[in-house]
Each structure stands twice: as structure tokens, then as C-alpha cells.
Length: 143
Image (cartoon, rainbow, N blue to C red):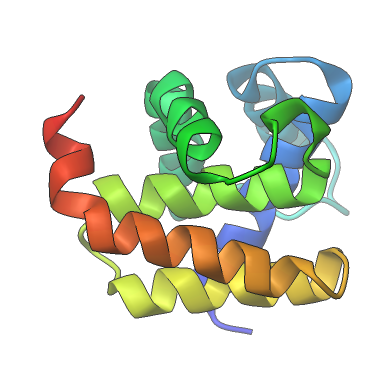
């Protein structure tokens, strides 16, 4: 598995855990870093994982507003936690990080949905992130 793929998966897991625990992503990230330093069985938290989690945290409110606005017939609180976490991560990377091609971001998010969520989730994730991709220039300006 490629390094960035692993980093995305770990960032997704941190966002998911934070949502489940009702903690900030920064708190959960700090817990993961601390655990990786004290438990040899835990791999270190890489730079790209930290960049994704910290970047999401910076835009968290805006990202949730976008999901609420464009996820037709879905309230964010009723959305499965897995899907919500994948969308949050994908939206951050797609809209605010230019280092990864948009198609790669969407594909990686869809792969996470295939691995961790329901049969309907990959299409949902793909559709919403594709909409964000189309609106990306405007979404950045509306900050």
C-alpha cells in the first residue's frame, strides 16, 4: 500500500475516532502520536497524516457547512459516521490541498468507502466530492 494511501487511511481513522468519542481531532491526533511514541506496536503518525488532520481541523466548520449544503436530503448528524469522516477528509484535501490531483482524492475517498462503509456509500461519496470538485474555485472564494 502506498505511503499516501496509508496516511489517508490513518487520517480517516483519526477523524472517525474523534467523531465517535466526541473529542476534537487535535486531541485524538495527539493521543495517536503519544501512543506511537510509547508503544512499539503502534506505527508512527506520519507527516502527511498530520497535515491532513490539522488541515481538516482548520476548515472543519466550513467543510461541515458544505456537506450540509450539498448533500441533498441528508442531515449531517444522520449521515453514517464513516461516510461523514470520509467526506470531511476528502473535502479538505480536494478543496484546500493542491498537491494531489482531484481525481486521486476522489478515488481514494471512494476506496475508503468501499472498504469501511455500506454498498451505497461509494456512489454517495463519489457524487458529493465530484460536486465539490466542480465548484472548487467558488468554494475557495466563499471562505
